[in-house]
Length: 112
Length: 115
Image 1 (cartoon, rainbow over the protein chains, first blue to last red):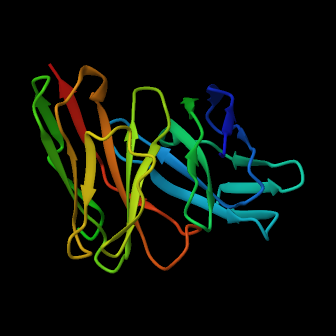
Image 2: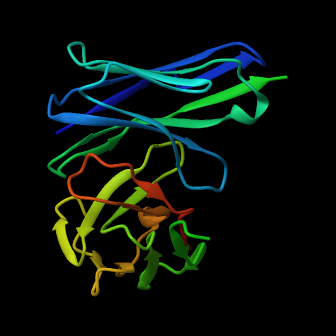
């Protein structure tokens, strides 16, 4: 089955700096890679996603890159703000509905 | 509010009791998923429905866990004879379209505490 690893587990940055979170996956059948932000007491919120036929996607301050050959994908947040502080999860899904696997999460703290 | 709704938000029960959680998905979404999330971990997939059909249930944690979606709208997750290890957040998500490669939108979960 699919295995998703995520690094780092915790990340502290100064406000205005960039943050990068990296994930690797094992199953080449995975073809959809969403990123979620989870705040305390809330469910995960989808912030950006990428499909396996695309190498990069950007939405304002957030971008995701995918390297299918190496089986890794990364989340990039630029100009970080205190409200970006949360736990971020990457995930790998496959179209056949057999794998919906999340990484263990990265706790991001943006220091003012 | 047109998001995924889960009830109750919190459930406290004694070991050995049965509990049932309800999930109301986004109205036009035909897929509904259940996950379990323990402290400090990512969501762990349990089962999913496409309309009223349960297409994957081998990941349910034991035969004490069961889920239904009788009319293809809301769903219930039941845990029988609860154990201490069942304490966790139970999350529901829904998605539109066919296939697994679709954005899933989560509710805020039901937190289960077993005394």
